[in-house]
Amino acid sequence: MAAVQRAYCIGSPLFSLSLLVQFIPLSPFYFTFLLLFMAPQPYKLLFVCLGNICRSPSAEGIMNHLIQQRGLQGQIVCDSAGTSSYHIGSPPDRRMTAAAAARQITLEGKARQFQRSDFEEFDLILVMDKDNYEDILWLDRGGEYTHKVKLMCDFCRHHRDREVPDPYYGGEAGFTYVIDLLLDACEGLLDHVQQTYLAG
Ligand code: 4NP
Image (cartoon, rainbow, N blue to C red; front, top):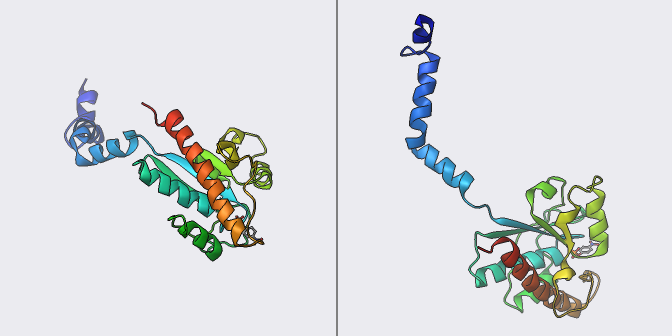
């Protein structure tokens, strides 16, 4: 009994610990902690193409535009990446930026390369074509994240394309087509995310 009393006497480590346990729930730090970790986390989308300067930043810009239109800011967050390292640090292609601006969509950000940690970080990974699909899944040998990787065109409702064509070596019409195709896919994708993950 004396040993127990000694262990809990003022100034002892156990006494300090018991104070901590009693008063932490009242501290502002504790409330901040609760808010941060118990608040619903946003649903995270990653768009992927080869260079991350044409198609995937367009998908990201279009999706952010639709998220704003629907008042879903903070509930869904978007990012984009390339399978290659060709254009790391570059802004979106100016021809792609012009085609997007013609539809009142702003493209932002700097190109980065897809990394393995993105599998964990994002809820859904949307690839533009089948080469992107294979390149990404090659990094997931165990197939642990296959269920997170989808072809962007799977969400189209008005276009029959299976892939978003690479506009990089073509003319202006190709860039405009990418924007219109991605507008269709992003509308379908956003409906899907809203109905499946944000409902309730
Ligand atoms: P993205 O387009 O994959 O839609 O960004 C491309 C950008 C650059 C290259 C190819 C495609 N490139 O070969 O440099």
